[in-house]
Image: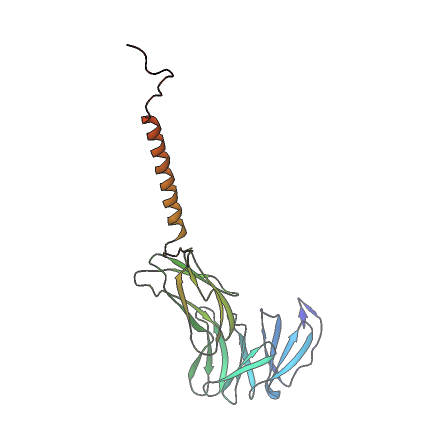
Length: 256
């Protein structure tokens, strides 16, 4: 363990340690131990554990998109996928696998296979597609997946607009809203799981129910009718009062 130009500590790991990689997500350092078929997980100046992987692990890379560490196992031609201190799975690649590297632009991990003269491409995230139905033309709707940037779309003619996001394997929660106050959805919140394949989520919107009378009309229509009737009655009273003949003075009409 080196700090600048000073040696802080010497840590004991597995047999024939070859390659370290830093995980910026959890702050751990992962060291491949080729002859003991393991990866030592280091936190600061402490070895947390040794994770068992495939035969003869040599190189590794950190995926900033999903937080996983990908370790190439040279003898059994596989790649071990590590999250934290656990192996999530193993991917079979080409012969005599060597160096992996992560492409943050497309989210893929590329692995060189020295023995077969090939490069294996590992997909590390999958599309999650939200499909809307029911909203009127011009309405905007929003989806917020926990821990991700918000998504939005405006409904065009025909409806059925979609929102898409790429996510690694895992369980997620989400929320849905719209700028249309008179529309709502039963899936205001929900959850889904991504597991090595694309995921589809349907979101259905319906008009918001309003208070109605026994005749099926909204209450505000009756309020308008009542106001109009009051105005008409007042107007009639005013007109009648203006047309009322003058009162006859006491004693009868004046003599002529």
